[in-house]
Length: 159
View 1 (cartoon, helix red, strand yellow):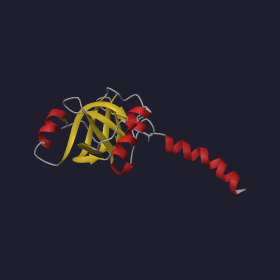
View 2 (tube, one colour):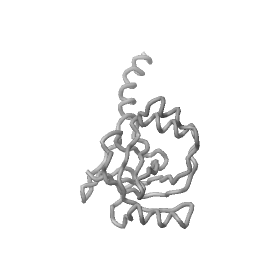
View 3 (cartoon, rainbow, N blue to C red):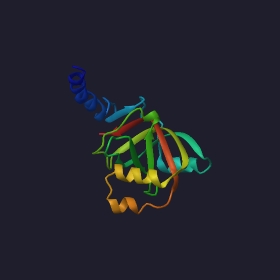
View 4 (cartoon, one colour):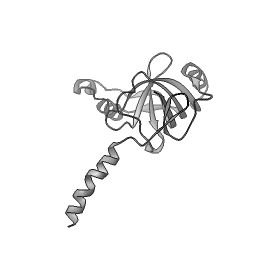
């Protein structure tokens, strides 16, 4: 009997785990994820980078373009810095996810905390695997990376 109960609950649990939490569309045509935020007061990536030059960490609301999101769960995304290079964005306390596909090239407003960080080779390889990179691309990652990371409390994606 307990096996039957487990079999009945497994698809429900897996289905809930695999879905992006319900979101809402707010004014301006944005879809909201995480904490409720508005696009008001968001600065450009160039302004953000200017603020970062004087600090190792900064709290900000930034608007930029999405490069890609995690293809396995939607648990991270990469956005464009002013020079086109990527910045990793994760979501506070793993508390929300964004869609796994279809975000590339979309405008985003994100509010949270950025810091300079070193990502080790194992984590870089993990991100590459999540993004669907080839085995050769993953194995080519041999050096840690120092870059800015952003932990978002809330995210708005332009429809």
